[in-house]
Length: 351
Ligand SMILES: NC(=O)c1ccc[n+]([C@@H]2O[C@H](COP(=O)([O-])OP(=O)(O)OC[C@H]3O[C@@H](n4cnc5c(N)ncnc54)[C@H](O)[C@@H]3O)[C@@H](O)[C@H]2O)c1
Image (cartoon, rainbow, N blue to C red; front, side):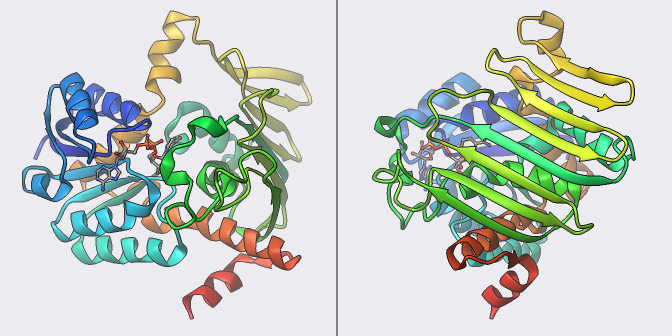
């Protein structure tokens, strides 16, 4: 096999970036766009120059892999059906509604011997990879602290219907969106051993009943380093989109996504504070290399490459469930008013 035939499952908001990623990847052949909404499936297929369908199962015989971009409540069912048909799976985050559901996805894909990758897209962007390299190659020295803040505003009038019932979406911003950043802090600073999260829901509480729209999570990592993540879906006037900072004994680093679309990595060390990486969407040569339209490219290319080369993806199922476990433990810790040990919490859930 020198090309992977892919069916895009779910043709809503995030699928656009996935479709672009497949169309720009020479080893991917987007064969189908599938959505229960026929109009959306047709529209996406037309743009991609491929076939369309409304039933995932009907197209599995004609593809090697599925790229699941549907609401979280159908991720497990679709992953298991695809795995049982021998298809590789890329699944949008968050993997599933519960840890138990996520485990069934890992078990089914393991049993079928297919590749299962969770779409933690930030891991595949050059700037997050660079920050990670600085953390693990000794550039920062011993890491003792981390901080991350992300800010969004989700208009209550335009929330996707699937986020508005606890049955379909039993979570809030931290699990659904914050999973990216908890994953980053864990990837950069080591396994999260203990955590606690607190939050509130002043803005979206009536619209998204499954969890809080604004949260704060504190973490202890395996080497004793501490980190904090503050985030919101309910802040109309943000200071920046993303701010991720890692502090070490030799140097500190900050990755920032600014409101004007620029992105930088700053490094502070004995020579002062310097920009060591920059992306500016206004610069033509930057658009070709980093960010923007290329934001999904690294992830899609990694998925295709792992299938063709028989490699385990960086964010395989067992890795993809880890931020979920830390967040679930932290949320329970917040409810009980205790710093929750993640391993103990996960063991308790399996009983
Ligand atoms: N990585 C990111 O930054 C990011 C950003 C946004 C959303 N997401 C994730 O992507 C997923 C989809 O989110 P979205 O914002 O695109 O939602 P969306 O509502 O815009 O799109 C979901 C689509 O799935 C379709 N669908 C529902 N059930 C289906 C089924 N059984 N078979 C086929 N199609 C079905 C819907 O008709 C809809 O078109 C979620 O898991 C979300 O968490 C990730």
